[in-house]
Image (cartoon, rainbow, N blue to C red; front, side, top):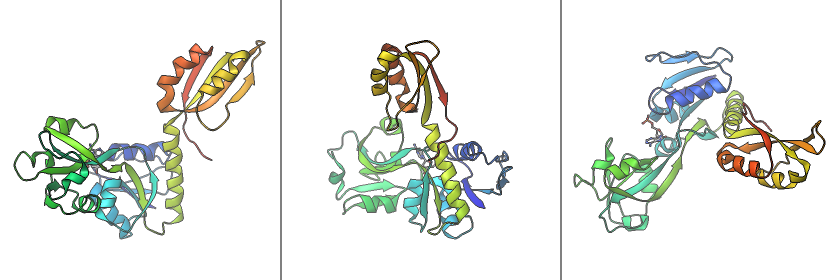
Length: 276
Ligand code: AMP
């Protein structure tokens, strides 16, 4: 099977790391490599520009590919999203200079909008708008008098602020995705499942703690998630061990609360895979 992987830019390293964490054993590619094999699976990775991945998938040159959702939507390629990959998160936002009287996305009617995402801007903004097609340094366009507003990718928002721009709102939330043709091959569907199990596991921690039996109810109420935790008796009378999966994002808030509720010997370990 062939998979297209971004050859450079911010999606390259996390994409290769995902192949690694999925257990495929990618042979570390050199800077100039165009392709690399995997040790543990009959998978060949082709390194191509993130912008070109939808085209390669659509044309059947590869069986699937990793790229940004923004790129997939902008290209309008006839491809199917097989999995969200949990990295490369950013949003496509519209922004105006601080001093602009425009306050909302609707206020962009009649504006000149500079962007390198003309298709998405047309699709997601209310007409009429005049598009100014620019490639790089989109943020400069208003200052140069080229445009009244921009539509561009934002992650932290610091580039907007540095350039004296204020966001009017988000047009699209993006992250890296695995895409395939409308009728993907069985291997691509299987790989999507493996990637999903890795992505889910990365966002999860396995929590173990000891607690007096009388605080069990309070501790179980604190542990989020739909599944009941496992409760195991300990050799010490009146004490139990509680094991549960928790979202990694909740850890910082949860640990002090669990301690305050009487939990001790709290252990938190990473999860490698989550299936089922
Ligand atoms: P690059 O090849 O580094 O230009 O990466 C382009 C892709 O990275 C974009 O199409 C997005 O999917 C993703 N990305 C994530 N965060 C950002 C960001 N702050 N600015 C631009 N692209 C981003």
